[in-house]
Length: 144
Image (cartoon, rainbow, N blue to C red; front, side, top):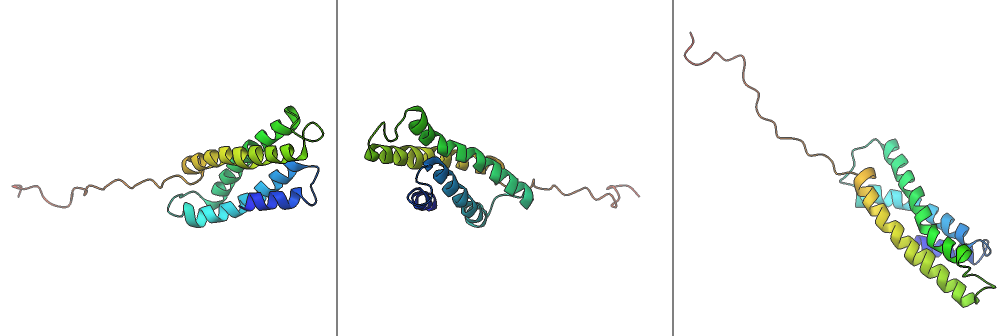
């Protein structure tokens, strides 16, 4: 929701001629909110890494995910020329929505979920059960 709202706010105001930039900026801001929510809610029972390592891995995963998010819209606009004047305004906007917000966001969402579970917030390792150590202070049975 944050990505969609910010994307359209930027795209319809200050970044009217830079839709991919609007999508990237919206995704970066949503990523910051996402870290806070993931750390405190979704993966609160997982982790165990130092906070700076976790933030670095989260940022790295999201840089890759931002590229994944932007790629379908970038290809549609600049490789397949689904932009004005090659197509109508309606086709351009539908293409941006489908390729950038639906397809790109869905692909990045699945990548993030997989990467967060494996790298950023791994399951805490379970501690092995301890077997009691032999009591070395006791005398062996039958020895006196």
